[in-house]
Image (cartoon, rainbow, N blue to C red; front, side, top):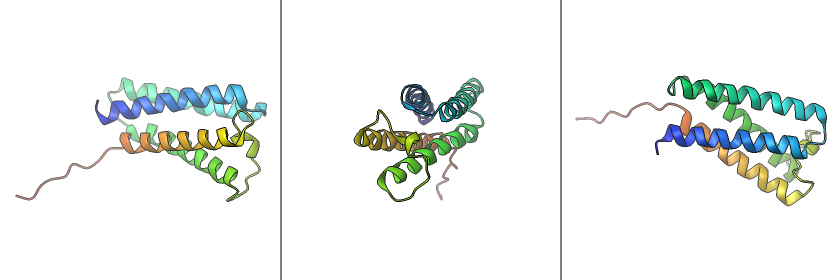
Length: 127
């Protein structure tokens, strides 16, 4: 499996899990609406990326970087490193341990998706 396909799979996984988590556990209707809107735009971007044969990976990479940042923000909030006032947005199922695990897994998946999707320069060997 090539890196782009794996990256796309991670993006789709992140979007599905994010959407389900937003619908099931978010206590604030406004946050749920915002989360669903961001997920919908990211899903459309991913669809267009796949349809164009992998061109413009930076768009999907940017969305993944945003998801990565959001979940790192959540990890820091739950760890007490900083306070954003959004602690309710980062709790999953009402449990602290499950929330930390969720934020860590989602940050890792989104980070790997960014790594896999962004284009790399070809290395030329010196001969």
